[in-house]
Every structure is written in C-alpha cells, then in structure tokens.
Length: 200
Image 1 (cartoon, helix red, strand yellow):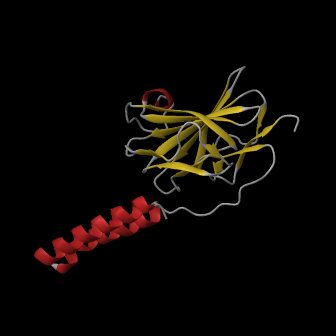
Image 2 (cartoon, rainbow, N blue to C red):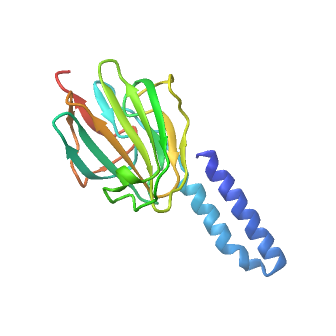
Image 3 (spheres, rainbow, N blue to C red):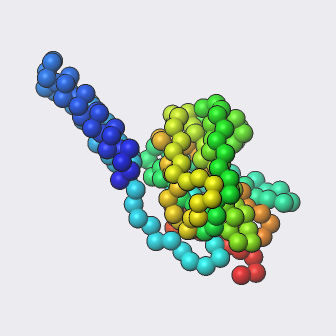
C-alpha cells in the first residue's frame, strides 16, 4: 500500500471519531467508509515484469487512443478511480529528463488533456531507444507524485510515482518499436507488454 493512503485513512478515521464523539456515534460512519476506500485505492500490488526487448505499461487502465505519426506513436491510457494508480517505468535505462507542467484539469479521457492538463513528463534513455511518458492529472486528480529525478537509473516496471484518483498516462514510442496493444484493451502497469523492439 502507498503510504499516502494510510495518511488519508488516518485523517478520515480521526474526523469520523471526532464527529461521532461530539454528535452521535453513527455520524462518523461515512468517514470510516471513505477511509477504507482510500486504503483500497492506494493499493500497490507486486507485478511480474516481462523480460526481453519489450516496453511494459506504465499504468493500469484502458488504452483509449493510439495516435500514429511517421516518426512516433503515442499510446494513451485512461485510469478510472477503480484502477491502481501507481505508475511504473516502461523500460530500463537512465532518466534524462523530468519536466513538470502546470495546466488545466480537464476530463482525462479527452484528447485535449494530453496538451492542456497538469502533467509530469519523464524521458528514459534505454540504451539505443528513448521512451517518453507523461503522468497527466484529470478532473479529480490534482496531485501528481514522482519519485525520480534526472540521472536516476530505473529498471523496467520499477515504480516511479503515482497520480491521485482519475487520471491518464501517455507514452510515446519511436519507429523502432512495434505496438502489441490496440484501442479498448485493458493493461496492467509493469506486467502488460505495450510494445516490442523491432528486429530483436
């Protein structure tokens, strides 16, 4: 479990206990339910990470858009409030850039969110390939957490942060990658293969 969930749960449990103490005992029940939801929401299950020349999904959720250009392909994954919100690195390598951009809080399923919303973009140099992916805030999510900084080395599937509540993650591949997913498919962070290196 992400420690953030424990903080939320403790705060809500305390608020419920105070409300119940000063009013009636059952008045705190909604706070206790929310506390349990936070503990469940901020779960962080272990994942079996595939090996080989592959890129794994950086997020749990549904592939809502695949946008192809001659020089790159962008895969957009939408996370609803029921998905695990811990984000992971799609490939192993060195983080060469982390860029935070403030922005709007549009519904994350809309394509405009990829340009206009608050986001944090990481670029990973994977020894012969560069993969870029963005943590994008949504309508409810207004807090992006990133544990990594430029110069850090990561393994494929390693935890790099999280986005609180509904959100979106975009990942951009170069032409050296062959996609293994399609729109509408559900993926799991760290274990689902999004793409495979061509010729390897």
